[in-house]
Image (cartoon, rainbow, N blue to C red; front, side, top):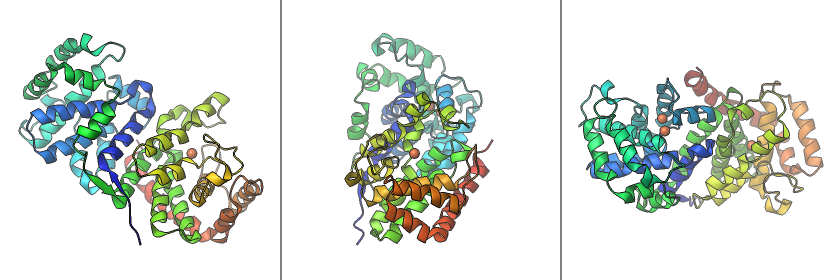
Length: 417
Ligand SMILES: [Fe+2]
Ligand SMILES: [Fe+2]
Ligand SMILES: [Fe+2]
């Protein structure tokens, strides 16, 4: 029987919003701080509970459409001219989940200046978008090297000067009503902001089941993979392969579903890796590889803090471990690597070998078999699972390709400029 699991929605979205800002220490908690400002403003603007929730989730994920580390940093520094691109992409990614359609619309307009709106401020989308505009703008103005109460008056003046042009005057008024509280500024820069938002924020009692988690995992899979043409279908392939291997191995229905989620999120920590390393056509230098090695660490730390997802966190994050303890970054021993983890290790290597890369075409069955059997014989991979893969090779390959084609179609239609 599938008993399922439930995760707190606030916890899930807050942790994943952290992942968006892994791109650079400069961006740490940008999504959360923006969400905090928007939420505080929304509370005094007396919008409905439902609108407040949509705005909060939109703010937590507002830059989800900025795919590369470089794009995120430039946006943060007010250096991007074509700001609309990440707004359009963010909307397209979010609206694939039915209950995020409202948030998707707000994300679409989070950089639209007041003077460009042709709908009045009492229209709910206009108001929500303008609150998010101000929140995002303000968060980027904060000097992170300076004590907050030594700069808040200047920040207030800067925001006030945008009234009528970039920001609707009523929205500026809403901000001014909260800006007089020192507590607001201290919470904004508090290292405990995550807990504040978790315990006080709109989603403190909302649960999300495995079906919902699966959809969120697909959303994040897209933002992980779509950063580069060469990885644009990688996690889709790994998830498909891991799912089918789990089924053939005889894992339970729930484990199979967890495996699919873990496959989709296995490279979540790559959001912390700059594109210059991710897309490098030649071999990485030692220094670059040291950076690359951190990605599974981040996959683990983001997923594990959500709570109730330990199994997914381990299956996702152990994919570069080896049975002899020589893998990274945990150096797990064979007995710490259960069947699910072993399946993921095989699925990741198989998918990577079968894919085209900047420097080579995808490998044939014979080549893949030779490489993977060698790894299994050296006790790096689980021999039984490698054998299972080749006993069912055609079925697995065609399922992997099928799932990758779906992802490729979405990527090529919407994400190639
Ligand atoms: Fe943005
Ligand atoms: Fe932003
Ligand atoms: Fe990886």
